Image (cartoon, rainbow, N blue to C red; front, top):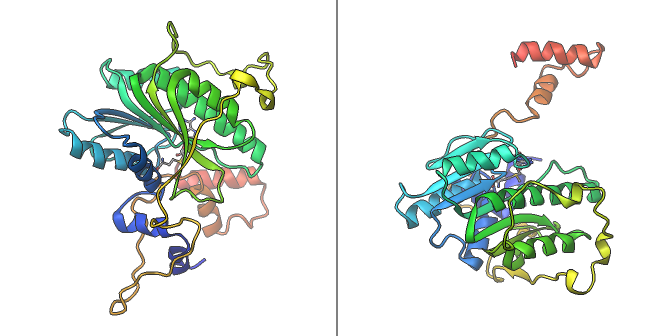
Length: 308
Ligand code: SAM
């Protein structure tokens, strides 16, 4: 696909480059904030699964304007390294690990966070059941971390796949938050099962001790997910954020070019640093994929060339 046709394909992709966001997902958090006023009074925020960092950028730009910037602390966590951002401390770590929660707490010097956001997503396999399952695992890991770091009354926002087991997740979130809404920002494609749970007013059950346990991983947890009934079945409100005047992420828009000026390709704001596909590109560019040697020998050759 040519560069200009890629630009035409997605209005938010192009707007992100124009406005200097590292990814089009920035608009999802901005749109959620428009609807829920998430950033009001927030001084300490955590961005889980943050790379390449567009949500951290949003937090940095918005929070450090509203509050005095020295008072604002933002921690971003991801498995992958991320280019630095003003006012954002990075932790390269796994959100399923208790050590990550402890590191966040250390950074806040024992004080609790006002807001935790998580746009975590696994590498999608295309097998919907598997993808939904892994996404649910990430959400529960984010909830566990949140229970360690969020202040009572604080808010939690996380990506969710609205698959068939979603009511189990809703019911777990409702244990911890008095208000849970499933929201679909206009910048999230209608064709995607992605949505966001906006969980407001953190109020864990009395005596709850934060831990990293996960009922979805516990094989003795004998629940037929689709048969939650009566009071156990939780249906949360669904909200489409944004009115019809906003751009529709599923539509293709013509490039709004100035007829006087020549089309100018805008490169990504922050190209990926050390992406996992770097090695594959190196092999292809150097025509190493075509060699008849054994794949492991190729890999060893290439790794030594790249000095990784
Ligand atoms: N919100 C980001 C932004 O706006 O730039 C995009 C996040 S991207 C959709 C999902 C991220 O989740 C990936 O960078 C991936 O490395 C991260 N991730 C997946 N599993 C993780 C885990 N167990 N711990 C930490 N990060 C994880």
